[in-house]
Every structure is written in structure tokens, then in C-alpha cells.
Length: 433
Image (cartoon, rainbow, N blue to C red; front, top):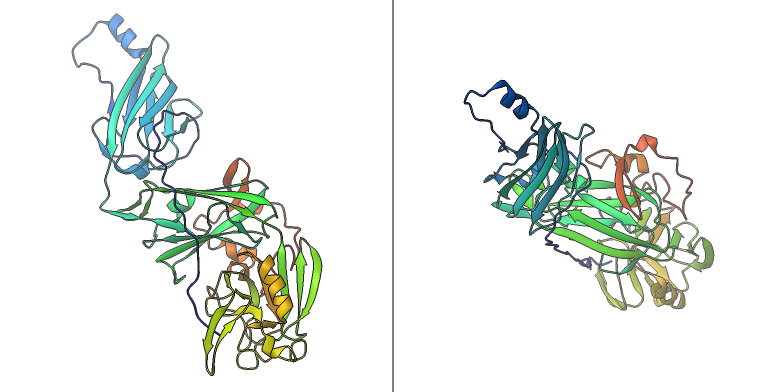
């Protein structure tokens, strides 16, 4: 076997848009500065007091001239009347928000951009008068920032088991704040969840989105991370929006038995091939588990004790070097006994046929081995049963995604899954020997 670096495609899109918007809803911390209309302290007549009492007052947080924490957002509060309109002008990303039920408080949705100027214009109406007020402020320029990368490439096609994998350049300690900023749009309805990993070995912190069951074939997925202004760790802010669109292709699923020495290949739910194989010999056993394919090469240079060989039609499933590949030298043992150094050996014609069909993210389930697979040795998100996977969410929430975007929901409110292993989802405990 060989250990080689993973090949990933990374794309980050930075959106800087000028806008004035309304709509949306969320909550956030209050900023430290505010302004409001102030009455004079001079003595006034009862008639003047009556007019003043009926005039609505507006308070802005942050207030004019403030240097604001972008993670706190914007709050507009009305007294003596109700808010009838709020707009925000900025050279950064659009800002939306919503009113409370009483229409006395408006709050922006999500974090603001770092190092950006904002002008808020709000209107309130009372019993006797309508007022419009404006405030301007700037968000802070952080001393430390984090960046985020995604493994999916723009408009690339992936298998039904592909996770959305994010790499963060700094360790994320406020995972809940970052998770709330992650949005998924899917052309077909999907239920899934985020899982945080500080020991992934690829970055200081990784985050994975996995559907509860395999992605529906022919699904277009758009991920957006509204990370600009999100405080991922004390004093460490995101400063860009990350967006990517990709496609889920056909369902192509392998099940390979180390005991029967055969593998089945299913396409879109139908068995299309039953091929002889040879897996890891005793001591080099191919580990059990539901993996997804990572990358491939024709050939791949494989180096190990006693061998250094260029191997044709090779599809990787672990970082440590387990592949499904052409093994023209072991055709006589395939279907009868296990002789490999840990890879799945295949007849040349079968290996070539699978290689030509495979895309990253196609599920491969190995069964029957005396050795279990290792978490994080590859894209192993399907090792975990759904209930355990949910525990990796900082919000302890599931995600419902569809054509209009995604929302976080209580997992207890979800309908039960009807998917079955191995074609619709992974089997519980699948990496255990």
C-alpha cells in the first residue's frame, strides 16, 4: 500500500455587494454603542408635552460613529410608535432583517462584514407623527482572521455519499456561531447534519455535512458560508463568504466481501456486475467500513515492503493507501483467497470498467474483515450511525435543505428514514470488525 496526499478541489468565492435590503430574521448580541433622539431638558407647556409624547423615537445599536463588533449585527428600537421601514446601505454584503411581533424592534440577520461602513435609515409612526432617522457606523478591522476552504469543485459531479468538507485555517471554538452561518440549497429535499472535527489532520478544524441517507441522484447542491464577520474564536473573525455549487450524479455503489472474495456493483439501485476480488492477506486485512472514493489514477505508483509498482486503474478509498485497482498479477487468486497488501484486487477489465464509471464520493462498503476501519482515514462520515452523527453538531440540530435553502430543526420532529443499507444508506456499526 502507499500513502499519498489527497487531491481536493478548493474554491472560495468572495462576494462584495452594495445594497439596501429588508426581510429575514435572527437574534444576536447587542453592541455597546447606541443613539436615540433626545428631548431638551427645558420646561415645556402641557400642550407641547402631549405632542412630544405622541412623537415616536428611534434608537440605533450600534450608534452613529461607533466601531462595532460585526458579530452583533444591527438593532433598531422604536418607542412611542412602531417601525414601518428599515434599510441598510453598505459596500459589503446585503443586510436583511425582521421585526418582532410588536413591530418595535428590528434586528439584522447574521453577522455584518468586517472593516465595512454601514448607514441605517429607519422610519417609525406614532399616533400623531412619522419620523425618519439615520445613523452611520463602521465595523472593526480584526487583528486575526480565519479562512475556510471547501473540497468540492465548481460544477463538478460527485457520488451519493460525498460529504461537504470544510477546512478552517484557525481552530474554531465558537462552533455554534459558525454553524449557524452555513447554508445549503438542494434541488431535491435532503435531511442532514454538520459534524465538527478538531483532529481531522487536514486543518486546525474541519466540519462535515452529511445527509442522513445518501444524497438523491441528480441533485444540484449549493453551499454558502456567510462567514464574514463571524467570530469563530475570541478575536478571530471570518472575512469572506464561501460559496460553491456542485452536482450529485448517478448512484454507483460497491459492496465487497473479504470472505466471499466477490464484489457487487450497483448503479441507480440495480445490480450490474458481480466480480471476483482478492482483498488483504492475514496481517494486511482490508478494513471494514463504508468509505467513499476520494481520487483515482492510471497508473498510481504503489510502494511498500518488497514492491514498487505502477498500478493501473486505481481508485483510492483511504488516506493510508487502500485502493480498488487492477491486479493482473493475482487474477488466479481472485474469487478464492486474499493475497493483497490491503487493497481490493480486481481483474483488469473489471477494474478499468469501474474506474471509468467512478466519481469522488461513490460509496464502497467492505465487510467480513477481522479488522475495523479507522475514523478520519478517508472520508469516513458514513462510519457513524445517524444518532451518533447528530452529536457532532454544535447546535445539536439537523438540517432540512431544499430548493429554497436550509433550516435547522429539532431531530425529534423529523419523519423516520425509510432508506435501507447498502443502497440507500450505510449500515449501523459498519466499521466494526
